[in-house]
Image (tube, rainbow, N blue to C red; front, side):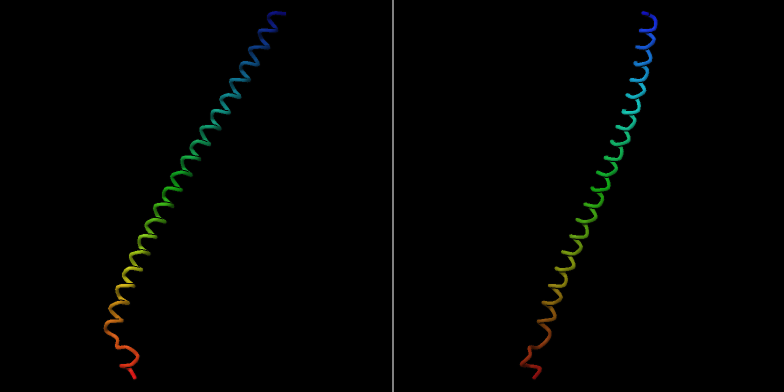
Length: 80
């Protein structure tokens, strides 16, 4: 009776060890997925910020060029 009880406990311990190993592996995979997702988000954010900077620079250049054009082009009264 005691021997069968010990064997049953050993089987349960082994089963729980296996289940623990499976859960640990799944957790490691999810952590890696999370890390990759965070890296991807950082890269996307960096690219977005670079795009915003380029747009701001282009808008500034457009404003400057418009100012130069308005200074060089005569007004509507001069064209008439």
